[in-house]
Image (cartoon, rainbow, N blue to C red; front, side):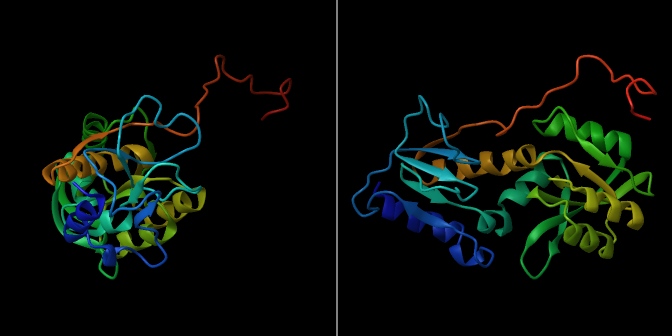
Length: 248
């Protein structure tokens, strides 16, 4: 299939006009879509310098996050338009958590989903570990023990704006990624529970669904997990807290 034909099919399902203002979406290079044949594609969260695609045979990279450097391989970006579109990243995240979507979180943009459920906080956290590919979460505990109304945002959603909006809409728990210190303080003040299941893990259900879409359009597509772009180290021995260490 010509790349130009594939892009038209994608944009019928995931229109570019849905993207947030100033969000880079669509084909960004390199090559001429009118001349490129696409039989194989790979879906990535990020294109990063180094060995991201070592050993991967592909005609096209479909990347969720716009790269911060010019790609050296034909690349198509599906970002906020995939988050917003019905059946896209946020719906896939809710479905992976077995949550029933009842509304959109931010009506002006279409970002986020509001869902209903009946969970204790402990049971909900167990559900997160079972449903998403993460072995750690960060929790800001709110005032309610029974979780009945949940908001989910794939990727970067634990910022002050979405935390306040969730509370305004009567949400008990907001699940997303990229928790900040100011966000945690605001959540404490508002009494809303936050779960940071990591940016990457909350994006995975949407990336897998994107692979399914491209396969349905006739392109052999698979998800390639490049992992986090940093390493995490854990101290082997506990710190000695007290006068000798200077820490108190």
